[in-house]
Length: 221
Length: 116
Image (cartoon, rainbow over all chains, first blue to last red; front, side, top):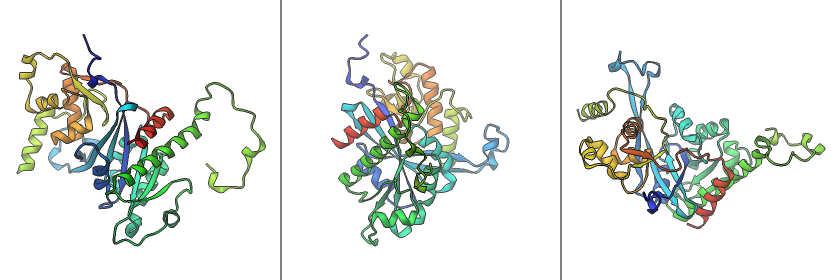
């Protein structure tokens, strides 16, 4: 047996990144820009009559819809990691699909177009509600009026912690920076929450009265 | 018309099942079992043969296999689950799905992305 001889056998840990946002906002472009393979379209069939899914009765009455996701990947060989990117449709009715995608993922990039900011509201709300780390990336279309990140943040009523990045989905460097910001942000959140969830080595240092500081409503979490 | 044929093909693949026997996620990766007997390979249907070709050299994720075969993810999972049960495929290492909030993994991802 020489099971571990070939380089194919290097165990790669796969991590998901969700690319969400409204129709025509640049999800497909973004996935294509960063992916090391020709981006693929992955399909999922949705059956509306979910309760009766396992029964064969009434099959002809069920409505099925096909939802397409853009799929691409980036292999980080030295780190033995593979980032799998999923560009998903932004409509509310596909939320259950996002649940599956978001589970165990690094987080999400919510793409926004300043001409139609409303389109990203449902995605923002979804990831906020589920505590999934996300950044908002504003794809700067040539014809769009340029806003500042602060203006966009205010318009979407984002938590001020959430990074807002202006970028160009066609540009590899720009797109790479968005992914870096997302991972940085996810790391910050993960380090912030871990002392509570895993009190591993030392017990927490005696807390000072600052923990009851009530001056900042934005930190009410 | 073409759609009807496509549905029939999917039905034939799954035998009407809607769920895979094994818990497979979108990013679960599989590879061909090393040293498969040619007789086993010959018995495979066209889709299974395609799967084998895709992950014969290196492991491939469920999402990618679904995309390359052009069949829905759920159907792909059922097909792969059957092939795993038949020992035509084996799960690629590491067998468990990673936790994207693990700080060590995130640090590694950051390092990798920055050096691209």
